[in-house]
Length: 117
Image 1 (cartoon, rainbow, N blue to C red):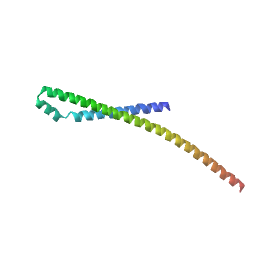
Image 2 (tube, rainbow, N blue to C red):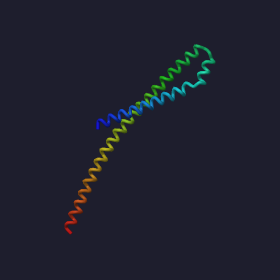
Image 3 (cartoon, rainbow, N blue to C red):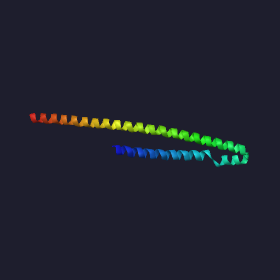
Image 4 (cartoon, rainbow, N blue to C red):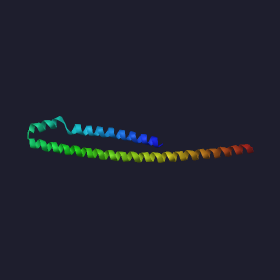
């Protein structure tokens, strides 16, 4: 069971990393459009370009922090779901055992009644 759990952890981590990379690429693409770059070049003021560059860098760091936060939240939700799945599996196994026990008792009672007749 630990081996399966470790495999699930590895798979979950890989899926989350893939989502993280896709989000980072999406934000990078939308944040750095060609039109914005042309406007910056047309303004021509070096000080302005440095300010925009810094602003872009700060925005990029903020986006990464938000993405990391979202990934952390997703990871915690997935772990909670796994815990709930395990609890549900235990409950279902217990119910199945109880159903089997009741069936044995019921069929046993029917056999005894059939022997009397």
